[in-house]
Length: 118
Image (cartoon, rainbow, N blue to C red; front, side, top):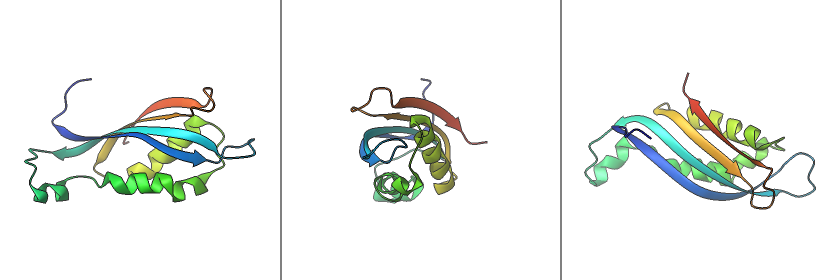
């Protein structure tokens, strides 16, 4: 990966139970995100820097809450693309996304996609 002068956000292993078509119960899934933004530094660690960054905690809360209402999902790619649309709509400073979805309970339910803002 080429270093970027822009702020990047890494969110690892968000564990969530998602409704999947054709299953009786929800499926245990793990979601990983790498979000590239148009925000440039420098970041000094000063509390005022927070206004320059993306509030990724709201994205995580969305995954753990209302995101499930978008189901039942047909496959892992559907999960990733639905989440990607939400993230692009959430903050227009997010310009790229790498989303991976996997289930420890079903190794066939997995995908990784790269999205770029049009």
